[in-house]
Image 1 (spheres, rainbow, N blue to C red):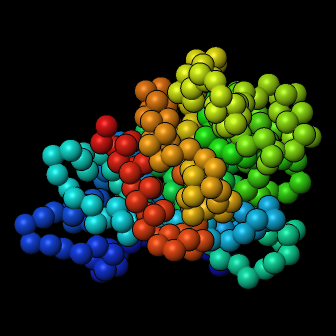
Image 2: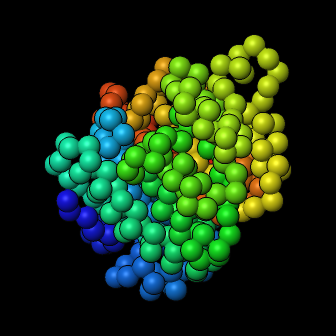
Length: 322
């Protein structure tokens, strides 16, 4: 396994976006981390800290496919080429860097042990962000990376969180070794979550045993199919869940849930991009302490890099600009 936290050097940044006379691109004005996490955070006076995770070991450890390691780079290649103008509060955002993890192993148990190592490497990163009073926006990688975010928050503040997740999969699998399918069951088991809510589960992709376990842990959940023939609203259901418990809010939006989005578990059935954006803006009203956008896998569709990159860029802009 090879891993490192990567800071973006000026020459690398300049190679990602294209300058154009008469325009100012985000890549020309956004603040980037450099030399160390602590120094980068100390010199940043804004609110949001973007952290990339370039790995797909978590999904593979869950018997899934690769590709999520490319989600963050796809985002950056689109986002840095967007315009800096009157609508965008760029001073509110720092691109800290990314954790890059690679492994050639195909052994499930080995992959799960590597996911635990990724947890251990990410927790201190998120601890520093929370201690600095900032809000992390975590992009890329598998849904396994929800666990170190939640753990870091608990370590810093000694508070349990409520987590709302727009996702076709509950990711509440057995404690069988870490992977992308059990971040929330591990976090619940370890005492980091006050209540977990997942919106829009797909009925055919969540086992009966997992649904039973969710009932045992008082998990709030709704099904995607139930919104077809009723007046149910993901916005109303999300508000109902968020108001059901008094605790800091963490927001998870799995790109698997957006229709035809190139992702680890791509599906033709899902929320439209506009519905996903509306849902995200609904959660913002409840002042989340973090946002997490995992599972984008550009390689699984033609023009996937542009599709994933634009979707993630719009989601980030929804948080920062509105």
